[in-house]
Length: 443
Ligand code: SF4
Image (tube, rainbow, N blue to C red; front, side):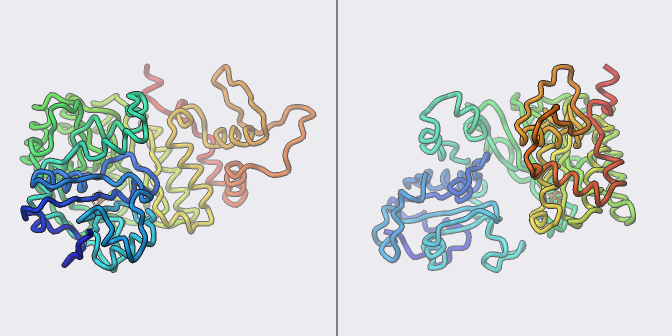
């Protein structure tokens, strides 16, 4: 039977000090709604903590298994306690779950609840110390993964590698940047958080870190963290776009020489040159890239935040401008759409820019115009074979071909923008990574 909680925002660890064995159900709301690539670390820590106290914990693999009949569910429930976490605001939950949250039957937390329950960044609940610094239970998702894959190692590797191959943690927390779009905007410094020993599972081959801004850590903290990571002998990776504005020669050399797993990923959020504060950010970003490229030849990606500053042609131009800059430094853009893009009249164009950039196999070979033409050809049912690596620069139908009366969304968005803003299109539509990337040319 589900207990009524005194306070259900966040998680109260004192309830688990009692001797009576509790049955704890865990809900990863993002996973159950749309699936997610990342395990929820807070839930893994809650699970680790509860199991260590002798309680029984299970990840709920489907809302259907709960038989959520209100008002009978709380007394009929096989669980004593349910904990739910949600990272994304857009994640949907069944109305019955919201009823249970509002009536204090479920502990809830996570950045996905920002605003929804009149929270703001300062009020977001954090885990109690003893839970926050508990070893995560990396087995929490095992049953779910088995159900999804039938235990097929290939499928597990393809879809759930983040769940099964990594130790995960925050070696530091905090930031100094105050970006208006970020949950860390109120923070004023970077401080040590978890020693690697707190979350490392020796049986797992890799490590990934969720540090907010490792590059802004004081030198002593940065060096200690890196030393500890190197000492594990395992490949590791920072998953947040790192702050390239704080790149130094020493840091670039260090990153080049460590066992870094996957692509190096940084952030390129700013583009406005007409505002002195923004301009400084742009200059620092470019300077950081220049330092980086002196030492590192491996593939480097930068998150390009779009539709935050505005959602108009100026923002589209700022996006293309950053894409061009990255091409010039042989780096790949990864478009991150701020949710306001949904309200832009250029919504489809933003989507197509993301599809073009975020798939390196397209981005490296085709200009934006060529990418849109290929989409239109596909829409028309024309499958041209590209044997010499040359993609068409103009849409041309074969002789006698009767095209469909409407263009595909991609081609139409590209064309309409060009008609309205020919100068922006002239400058950027035909740029190709392969032509511009100087590092490729040198080889
Ligand atoms: S630099 Fe990153 S972590 Fe820091 S406030 Fe900006 S987005 Fe957030």
